[in-house]
Image 1: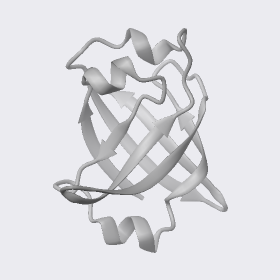
Image 2 (image 1 turned 120 degrees about the vertical axis):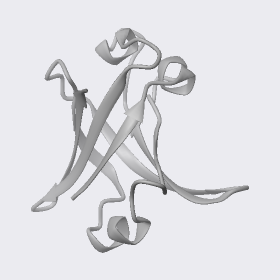
Image 3 (image 1 turned 90 degrees about the vertical axis):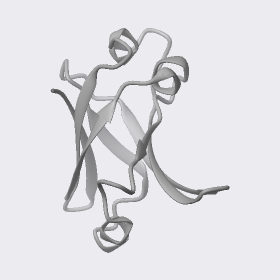
Image 4 (image 1 turned 90 degrees about the horizontal axis):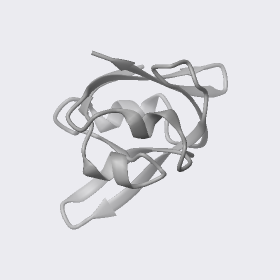
Amino acid sequence: MIKFKFKVNNSFLQYRTRPITIPKTQVDYEQIKKDQLASDNVRVICPGNEHPSGAIYFGIAGYGPYYQVRINGSSRDPLRSLPFGARLSVLIEKIGSVVKVRLNKI
């Protein structure tokens, strides 16, 4: 299980995938590998108890490797109504074969 804090930013509000980059400063990336949390099929539990699907993506950018939560949002999903700067607690855990991402307002 990993846990970190996220501040809603422009990328989160503008893109339908609602990207949340998992910060290296708060999370040991080796733990993500060890717990096998990177997956193309995750269940997301939103603050309003909506349950969109998503993925935990691994990529390499100019600054190095990164992991990102990507949510299968839509133009009308409830996450778009979160205000810029809102703070979320993000909990990622694997239960059996299912990876869950829980977003809670702080």
